[in-house]
Length: 234
Image (cartoon, rainbow, N blue to C red; front, side):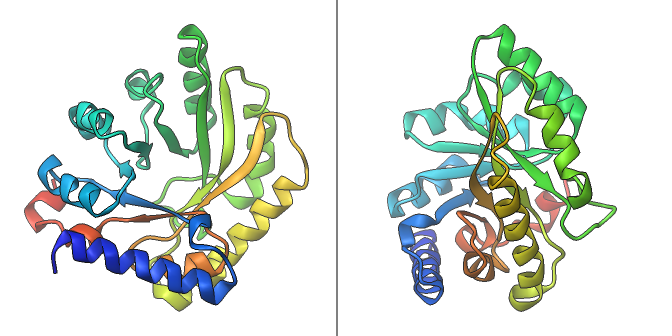
């Protein structure tokens, strides 16, 4: 199927999942993940209706930044961010979805303060406790937020997770746990911490994520197709 057809099918699935959950389709934002996707193919998704994109790598973000700006796209950095690359993101209006350690938060705050901007971010939670993945452990989330909330020029806007790859139904228990964390933190009314966005769900499990309250789903393969093996392993 074409990218346009794929995008339309994903949007239909989102609408159906929202209906099943008693939610409106406009409560869920589709982030088209453009890792290793060239701008010509991204333009096809834009023609189909894409307005938000997610990049995993800072270098790709920089290479495509002019294209994103020219097309008025809402940009999200969803991959792990190294502290020495923060300077390339601050001031770009991109939402950082992968805040996962104190030193990164401090560097974001430092550069944002120097540039007199406010940087919005989501905290990545390692909801499955997987050693190979980044993110704050659920039990460490509150202490982390207490420190970050006191930093200037950084604002927490919600949570993000990448659950274990266990399929639609298997992932629901992790998404439900994320929703509980999200709701618990929202009830605490922490300064500079607004639980507005719950980013969870990818190509293999986004429908379950919506059933459990996701406000953002990050979908790449279901829109653009599988990446070539040689490229994906680069």
